[in-house]
Length: 200
Image (cartoon, rainbow, N blue to C red):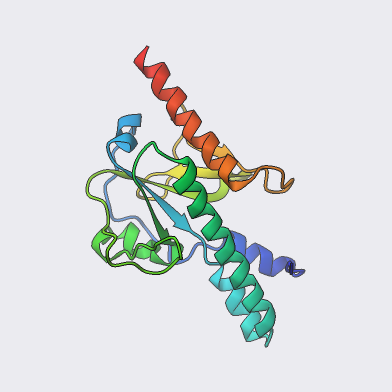
């Protein structure tokens, strides 16, 4: 399977934040576990549109198509893993191209997608509280640097949650030995165990 050999394209596709400006919504501080359990989880799917567009601009249509297909396969795998392994709250899926609507609080304008990555008008944006989950690189609190790759929980302004909330499940992406369903299963387990500790 094709892998990009251009470092700048990889960086652009991995780190670009599409349409992300200042957050216009007020987010509750000190989010607790009930915030998620009584609400919903929205999984932000990546598109890698900047990298795909850069390839097309250079006349590399075939490679752009391969990259697009690879990303679609990754997104479908992530959805499948959540549907199979995650039960802590209702879960929904949307593309990162909807980020502006999210940060502006225009939740009713956010298009949610189904298992086939198709926009589905029968899926309504959830009412009440919600958190965001996405595959990204962990940020260290108080430091201007990123850490390992993980499935990370964030608030509605895309601010990463922190301890004691179980806010990530490491992917070990660079090593490639942890499958997506296991990553989601570990997140679910962390949430359940944290809930059990709180009930003692």
